[in-house]
Image (tube, rainbow, N blue to C red; front, side):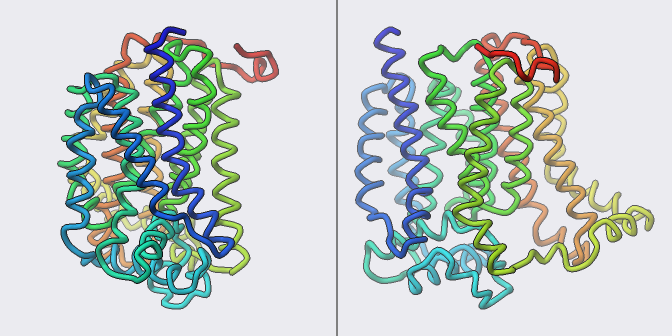
Length: 403
């Protein structure tokens, strides 16, 4: 391996370490401790140094990361979901000293079953400051978002491509990220996981880099499932990317490791506390069938989907068609479309008033689709020639040795 490839591999390991920080922090809160914010701060100084050393491709990070941090600290958390769910849970973790603080189901309206990756990080920043306020803990958004920015910069290998991708991210989700919403973060993790899973299946990855991409995918799956409940089905769909190329064992093993982290750090505790989700207060299947029969609900949902995501759904269809000879590209596009179909089903099953539920959430739930598609599309276009057609493994090949 030449020196440049070795340096790039070091950059991917750095991105993996930064992705692991919020997960390690959540684990420490489960034992009554917290991760000192000076540790991620020191690592981000290293990341900025790495970006400066490789300014020909990563120089935008030298401008974006400091500006992102300043904007986050520019005003307190004010929007409803950010303040009353994510940072309310963060304050409870900070005060009670445990990641499972929300699981006593106090203030059930705050969706206590929601994962606490970001709230636990916010609580650590507050502990570092030694008191709670409404501004400094917002750096949790930086600590969880910035690793994806570095990773995509390394994957795209082109400053202009990264700049165009980040411009699209800002246009779609800039205000939500700055205001402390987690929906945008879920979309970024989803898109990054798709890109890494697809990248791992192409000849573009030399054998020496396969371990780091396996770790990256495992960390992304774990983080994706621990951002919002919607991250779990998204991660499940990413696991299907295993069947788009020859290295299916690596992809499945990475996804399984990510799911295990999710179970250990959150879902087992939710089951133990017997906290359910408000979507399942009545029979979901019965509700969906009733809405399909009424003749108005499905068209209403479709109209809202087209209003908020029509260009992105069309782009996913186009990507699936033009990339049909490149299995990882086709697989990623179909995963995004599959996730959109799952969201459609969720709205059919919702026990809430459909007009109210669509009006208060559809722009944010579809943001996950839009950001995932934009991120995966950026990878697909910059690796179009590097992702030739590969054979899809059949069931008869599942026990055969893999390269």
